[in-house]
Length: 423
Image 1: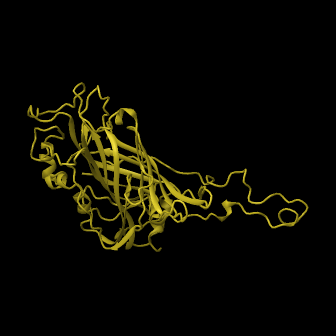
Image 2: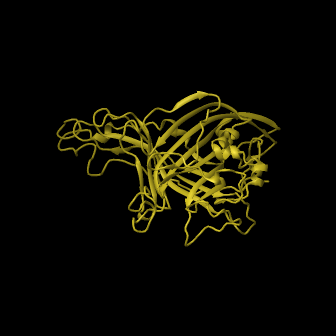
Image 3: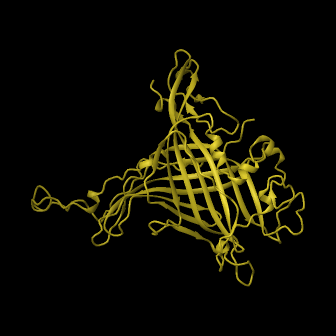
């Protein structure tokens, strides 16, 4: 069955939009009696003139719109005043402070044009630097259950943000070049996650590490598992409670609950991945320990940052997004498409969309616009960019740190086929 597709939210930037120097800092003073600069003296260059557009590095692959499928896990707070309805009552001794929510997801990520020169001013001996980046929007819909029209699949995550490339600074502070993801989430959290090491490129498919969802104590760090993490338990504080149909389909299994990154590994099966490039951004970068972080509204962080057993007297927070870690894999995938005879002039208003053969209902298949004539049926072979990520947002509440893991595999959509094949 064809899976619903997450809506795309445009982040287009007008062609005339660009960063540049203030009008108060002209590149050369007006001429006063001379032919070049002031009284014949060569014009004075501003600091802006020495700035060059910083290479986006691997962020250059974040271009256009990507869509695909993924999986989301979140331990979310459960209220006694507005409890989450459950079809099967859990045992009375089951903790009631959380619900483990599991979602099969459809996702769209749209990237805007590069910003160009974004000047950051240096102090004293530190020269000015020029950042570059791309704006983006991320939209995730819940397709755990397919709704019938006119109902639409609910959006469970929307995120506008910026991916920035920061060049090295050699004086103050002395820092390597970095990647920075700056994002805002409507629930009330803003993040700045950084990476101070170069992206690493390897041949073949990515080797994706495990990720765990077992909560830990904020103080002490000991692991505290819950019955909801056992797929066969149908009477737990979990949505969905009955995972039988999903286990049968292979979409939510015990192995996936033990390691959600299996979803990414399975998505790569059967694909000819030539190479992959990976990097990881963290809101709490360990080396160097400079910048980054999360910021939450008062309702989320409270007075105790979620560190203590929750109580009104302590003015406890409800879900403090304490830190974020996200690893990305940008892969070069080789594939082919069988093209039928086609004449562009015969289809002036409705673009013809072509794709490689799908490997399954939840395969992230690239979609291309056939924008050239095909005189006779033929097969074209080419390479396209695939984006995968695994993100863990740690939510602190009621004295525990609760992992919120989201993974997805995304492929380009609505890309002119002529941009990837030789006509």
